[in-house]
Image 1 (tube, rainbow, N blue to C red):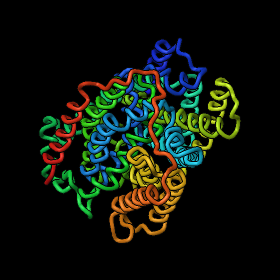
Image 2 (image 1 turned 180 degrees about the vertical axis):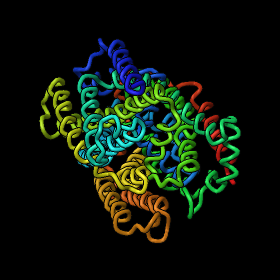
Image 3 (image 1 turned 120 degrees about the vertical axis):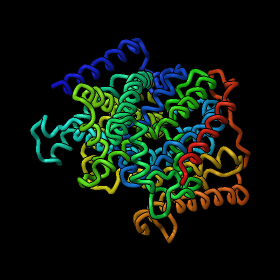
Length: 529
């Protein structure tokens, strides 16, 4: 009863506080609904970025990956800091100067309408078929294990319970997304983010203390080092975890796309009130990501030590740990925070999907003369259809080796081609739109063929799958550069300023970035065996 009561109380508190803060926000226009009126300051940007990323595919999925592969999976948190530095110093100034709401809009400015339409379609398909169902599935899986929903609901069939929980989360997420714009979601993100960090660190502390026989977290870490030294190596190997070399190919590319060009994530930064606020928010997120392994990897390592002999699946590890270590009143609080994280990522994906649909396909092909109100209305109707489809499809994701590994494989299919086109578009003024369109389609085909047809374990054509992703990226870049010489644009592209916000950079951006990079290197050196 305490679990349920604390869950309801914190959920209600976050919802009411968010409504009070944002009750006068304007959400009838595109800027108001999708970008929070371009009024976001750096604490809100950082909180929103962190929690949009920090959902159950991270809490459940990444801890599940650590349960399977050990400390080396911390790369998804630590290498992300380098990507955020690139975002703050290189990508964000260009995106904000362009005055865009979506990444495909930038591609339209750079390459033309065909490239924009293809990118929009790829994003929409990926979000509808991969991202949104996965958020719902991992959220449902985590809550079922954490709150022992089988006992609470009396539903013993796991498949039925999974479907019921998925629908419940999906409906709640739809209500949030329907009645608020980006700023509402960003404020809710920040409130839940504070709770999630408190809960995440509490779980890590209790977990290490349990391993150490309640003699302190130092004793717990000593036990892990003595019992499982091979699992506490930051560099990994071909036989265990993430090989160190992949940090410079596929792992780096997936992180760069995710934090620099992934619509779901960077839409938060497009709402910045100024370039300086955006850079502060992005780099503060980088600083917070350095703490990520403490609550996204360490609990998975502890769960392996405590429960591996019980035969639980990788993706049950985190929920099992939480349910057994937290007292009832804290379990309800943490479950409420987790629901906030689920709704955050779900809403971020829905908000981004609606932006891509309405400002891309709707305004370009369905109703080019539509008013602002009609555009926003179409966006809200579209997300209902996408959410319903995701609720139906999410339970079919059960049975993956690790859901986080599945996520990275599926993401790479569209991450790599779009990132190649964006990077070359920014660095080369002559690459033509026709080449960009071909590159995106060819990249999707090459990666899908490799991962679905040629993949054997973690290897494709005898090389690690992340190196294969690097090959494909390099091939696309070379093709685009060759076409920039063989069939260049008639006029060199030049970025135009289409924003009214202050574009003065933050004075401390470069120094803060240098500190972050040094800390990343130090972490890898400290935990390398």
